Length: 237
Ligand SMILES: [Zn+2]
Ligand SMILES: [Zn+2]
Image (cartoon, rainbow, N blue to C red; front, side):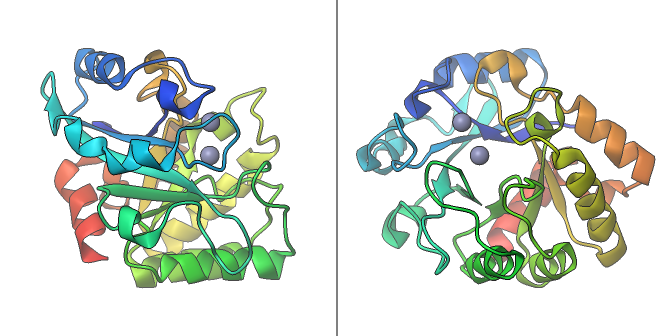
């Protein structure tokens, strides 16, 4: 299975990441990747950029070094009504929106609360990807989330960074395995994200790849293998 795109990349704008958009695109080009999603953390993440950063992304070219750039955000979920840290009007103008639970922005709820929050967000047409849903700090009803993802054409992320030893999201492996298995069974589409915080990590999908191969998830369900397929999902919403 050949992976040609990475939808989860952070730049210096996130405050705790270390490359520019230009450096990210250059590395992606060297790797032979066709597309990257620039998804810096929303403004409520300590040290991340101001809302203006996202409003002004139009100055970034659509393509750098032959790599298509999707201008996006990893928005923070702020409460269990699904409130995000970027207004809807700005989200609607972005190419790619990931929504994620992060410790500095929201306390974990019950399984029921976390699940309902994600399902509510998936119903929004401007939410494309659920970021690292395998994080055990925010337990979810996997079957219900995957079912809703399929129905709403939202992509479920398998976050390669969560699977690496020493990850901040310790214990994600077992959940990601269950999530991937449920996606295969229900026919829900999956996106692998590197969650790179420096250019050299772009497209590092080794742990996710092992899991995909072990579970024999069909290529049609992994959107990283085709720019067209990724765009179909984004458009369908
Ligand atoms: Zn980060
Ligand atoms: Zn995240």
